[in-house]
Amino acid sequence: MNKIYKKIVNPKQLIKMIGKFPRQQKVLMCHGVFDLVHPGHIRHLEYCKKHCDYLVVSITTDSHVLKSDLRPYVPEKLRALNLAAIELIDYVLIDNDSKPLKNLKYIKPDIYGKGYEYVDGKINPKTQEEIEVIKSYGGEFMYTPGDYIQSSSYIIENNKPDLKLVKLKTLMENENINFKKLYDCLEKIKGEEVFVLGDTIVDSYIQTEFIGSNAKTPTFSVKYIKNNEYVGGAGVVSKHLKAAGANVTFCSILGNDKLAEFVKKDLNKNKIKTFFFSEKNRPTTNKKVYIAQNYRLLKVDTLDNTPINDDLVDQISQSLKKFKNGTVVFSDFRHGIFNKSSIDKLIASINKRNIKVGDSQIASRWGNILDFKDFDLITPNEKEARFALGDQDSAIRPLASKLYEKANCKSLILTLGERGILTIRKKRDKHDTRAFFSIDSFADNVLDPVGCGDSLLAYSTLAYKVSKNDVISSIIGIIASSIEAGIDGNLPVKNSDIVKKLKIIENKFQYI
Image (tube, rainbow, N blue to C red; front, side, top):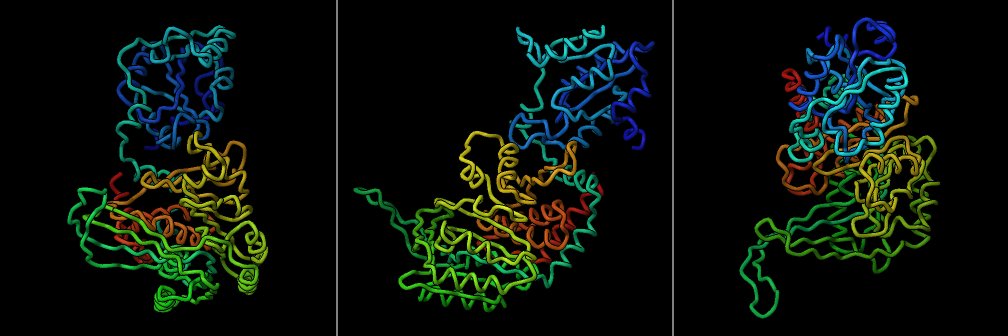
């Protein structure tokens, strides 16, 4: 393995190995992403090796791979290792620029090899730039013979391989993170102080049995079986935080009704400190879903989305001001608490020593994650990010980077459902290629995706607070989300559940 690592070099190290141009031994250089090395690549490299003494392959750094969503699929360090393990290749380097022109001018390979897939009647403008550089010092440009070659993009988009364990292991190695640090973090979050402000929702799952339909009207007839009710919205975020071991204070709006009593009883049983306010004629938000044979037939909401009055905003602000040392989480479902007239005042009420975390779960309403600017951590999903930026076209990474810049946050975790998460963080320098990273979902058996974002928000928040590490925060968050996906109903994930899942992954790491 040490021999393989020695083959990965930077341009200056490479020149020491091969010498400057002109040189006695021929050097051929290839360049590409090499996201997944497939038989077409091997044939290309075999042909190149026949025409040189040294075969050098450069790969595009992660930050400049913009082919499609969540690319590259394989991180640059792992792509470099994959190539270095191929005996045909003598040296591998990671190109930190968007084009290989700078390295071509510096290294001056005797031959520059390009795959036949890049020939299609006309010369690609980027290829033309490369040809001009090669000719400028007297080098040779060569196309490898054509045969049927599927690109890495085609393979990934049509039959994505399962590399989640390898990708996670590579990320942890690159960031010097071991499982002990993850376990220590999960232990340290116990006893953390958290203040959650947000909209309470009671989710009602009404189970029925399908009987038939009316012949004259499009009406289903069902038989009632049972009704399961859960505290949802910001309430379940509080329950996730409590299940993780934190000391939680929850502030919200409830109606003067039976559902309010249900919420109070449930949260009291979970030993969550609460500050509840009410407003005349405003009900407790209730979302009913009618289900038959696992199909959701109808959703009926009882709610009032109008902004709460100024007196309530003042009372909530006073509660926030009294919380002085911990983490404040704004969980916005746009059911009255957060609005244009209240948000600035609520944010101003947060003590400067507190960590600020924002999540805007807009669904079909008008919330905007950019209302929470200058926060430490935000955790939007793709729809919320696109809504905030008015952008339905950009690929995921440029979209997330743009949102990160506009939100001016320290860390952004973009949740992508079954595709996992993409995290954006501050660059340590202009060549930092790990200012973003993705982690795949580890859900084994998805029963109910509802609540996955809530569990990620809770655990990523706590992990970020105690570790100040974006990677640790993201790993613990995605594990919590993956566990939640396998639970029927929006129920809190226990701290011990995360530990068990991590131990399973740690054991699997021994075999990769």
